[in-house]
Length: 458
Image 1 (cartoon, helix red, strand yellow):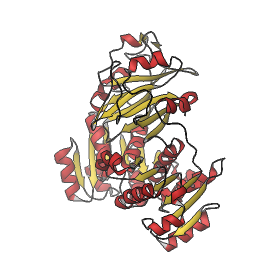
Image 2 (cartoon, one colour; image 1 turned 180 degrees about the horizontal axis):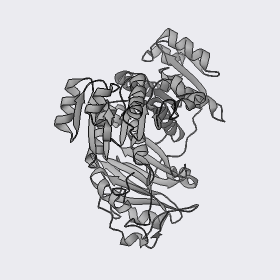
Image 3 (cartoon, rainbow, N blue to C red; image 1 turned 90 degrees about the vertical axis):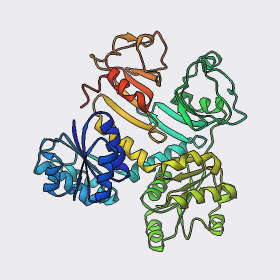
Image 4 (cartoon, one colour; image 1 turned 60 degrees about the vertical axis):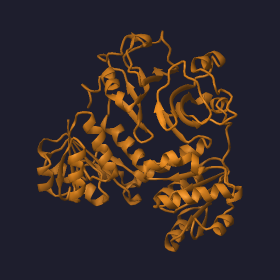
């Protein structure tokens, strides 16, 4: 497949890396000659220097026979015009645009992206995606990672195992014997900085960071079994009134239970604007790193601190200071994925990475049809793939025990009609079943072959 990616920043770079690794014909466009040179040298892609919205630049990038344009520059307007030119001049079949401004994302303006207006097939909002990720963390506050699959019926939980975890030193195969009615399944373990897919005989140790799948009805029980009893969030402090902070505050206000929320913003004009938009949230003007202001916000009694400013260092230090002051949970927005291994040492409970979140969302829409959802684990070390089995898929019509999944891949759930099942060897996979698979990145191509997305990719 021939794909043009507009923008060689963090998001564009990682999309190019993923799609080129899947043997697509990828071309990257950016105005920064150094970025395009680096992309051409490091990635298996073509690179063109210039404005992605200019017809001649798109032409040089091969738009005349491109199958897909992904517009992910830093400018909403450039992304929109790039899609318009790709459609009107080159008749590119599919266009995906990353848009940041809430003004472009209001539901009342959704008609704007019709083919006869602005022909954008999929609109991606990093801020909206990050806000949803933050809300997932707040919903399961004792986890460092959280995501849902199968229309919210299956939960992925990232749990750091404490010394009092009841299942330490227990082989994974014994968990089924100890809790035969529990739907939980350990899919990945990070130990000493290395992520791997475990074998049934592997044990869990103190300090492990585990990725667990469980069904909605077993969510609270799973948390208790792995030493993280469910907690209620009643007092939340948000630092940063940008698009993410405002989206989180609005989401908290919309919850059925009453949440006492305070929002700190250092820019006076932005703080005043937030105060006008929000109904029940108390907005404070000042520096979120200020110990006095955090004290005024009631940080010592806060169930959670959510630091989502535009600066990684501020978000990290705010989380550290808030935890020292008594906050029970710290969530920090961090763009640099190399900071994630420091999470434990810094006593920050969860990092949210906008780049990973946005890349996951774009891949989800690129792999449409057969693959329904994609979620990246860590620094793209592994993927969770939600996909439908096709009639021609090698997995269809076979028992789970007879499917040759690669060593680093694990079938985590199977949805048959309305039934959600925990996999076992005698379970037969049929056409139309929806599978959720955890796979190390090196094994994703083989998983896709089993699902036949390498042939029926689009």
